[in-house]
Length: 266
Image 1 (cartoon, rainbow, N blue to C red):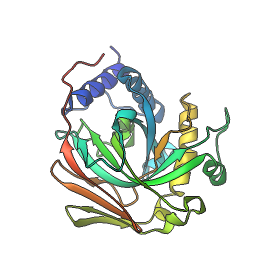
Image 2: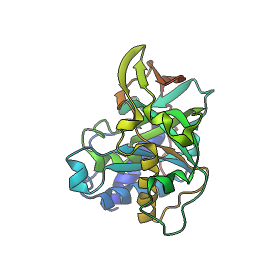
Image 3: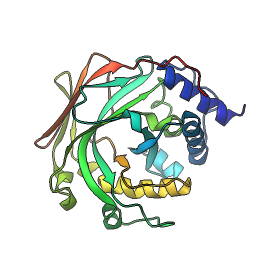
């Protein structure tokens, strides 16, 4: 088994079993192409339906070194939840965090071969924007500390998406200036606006079009895009509660430990 398959298989198995994984299961990828190749192999082994993609930021100076300021990872259909969900699961023995995010739904696929979209062109692909919470969790506790290439190799560190209320008047983009505040157990852990997020949630869509096109992946209507952490990545553990206010809108969930299937990966 080659290095790429070994890493992908190890992460799929650990995620299915909801158990920690240490050390990193192979030679860490050295390029974006290598990291996404591991991710694509894991998606194929996993076999679940991809219902969305998370987009995260690559900070300086690595953004310059890698030639990208964002990264992407799959969100599986069985880990997308609506407003009636009270609890979201994390891998207790690994890394776990919660992030306040704008969730953007794709209403129209980009034209075949069309990349490098302007923000207006990316906005034309969108048919809804909601508030939400991304759960960032991985079996590998060092996933964020080891940098974006390791993060990419394990699904971009995604473990679930909670989709809250739709943003009224989203097409006018006024929500970019809404104050967003995140709290864990009633303690404020971050505050910001989407205006501070590079070129914002719509820019995340434009990035994703290019990222998926380079990998031969479609961006189909109905796909959700978790567009980036507005107030930061807030580490969390089972038993805690995460809440976020987006202007007058609110979303919240308790955090619980994921129950593993205790089966070997196919």
